[in-house]
Image (cartoon, rainbow, N blue to C red; front, side, top):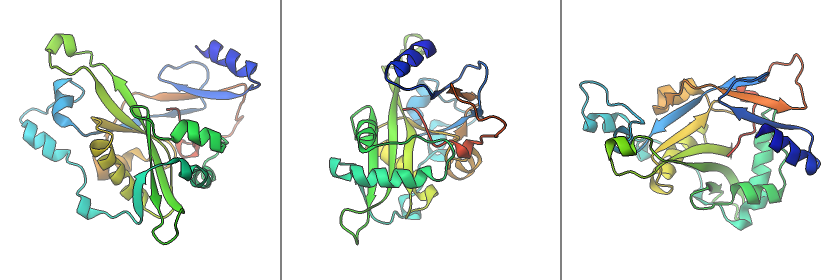
Length: 248
């Protein structure tokens, strides 16, 4: 797969690239983990994505992982799905976020259109409109869908053909607090995207300790290794917060 990706990139005039994998090969420039937030707890127990602790009922487990109360946070502005007219503003916000990270991708409006325009069961992007300036956006966030067939279906006969998770993709928050926007993302993942869980990679501004302590995310023990193709950072240490690029 890596060789084929290289061949295609070179055929299109690209000599440098990067990728991440759960498999270790020489030599990653960064190692990160992810954190997962349970949403549909009953289903996740049924498919054995989550385990019910001994002595705890399903009702208690669901209560433990209730989403943050909507009256405990406030989003400044009007939040809605991204539309074609928002592409230029989303690109502007994306570039602002890129300034915070050493490793990022240089996008054009075509890239934003292809990667972030909402497509059912693929990607969903939400924008926050400034209520005082028509057409101006202050924040945006994209979440991608990840569909997988539960391996326990034949064994347990639980009736679920598919488990769907949302992964936090690109974002930029200039007028709202990070934690409030993640709380909003959880509700959008549940109510609009209809997913069962949400995942954040430990890159950009995502801090696993904060997500765990304040939003009840569960740290994943599986490491992700990040690799550059035909490029080296030399002696420079790349930290998770330096990474501003992510795969869908």
